[in-house]
Length: 166
Image (tube, rainbow, N blue to C red; front, top):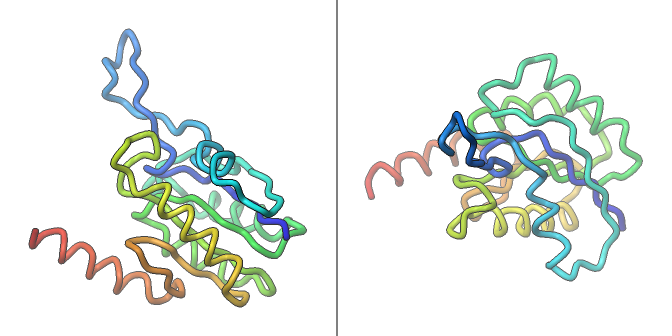
């Protein structure tokens, strides 16, 4: 089995490097989080990593989404995991839903993978398990759940409501 992991950016891949002018407060999209997680996870499948885009999801344009679509469609593998920012993940998932015959799972994180308390490693693991066991379609793995992309807005709204009540 071969899984393609595609980076598009988002919080999961953010880093906050110290610099002479930014004092560590500005972010950059760094190396794909997959590259920090997979080598230490003792996985028993082949995989490749594609760096398609390095943007905060609020900055992803329709042209970027088309490029992500083309990148996914051009892969020979039929199992794809994509890291993406959570703010516009559902928009990209909707565009990708036009691709037939592939199982595509988008995931992200509330904190960068580089942070000890990040949910990134858990979410990458969850997305990796989901892409191996679900039928073709587009799914989102976040908040400890894996749902078809159309169900994500309701899940996200539920998460936001619970976050506000804590």
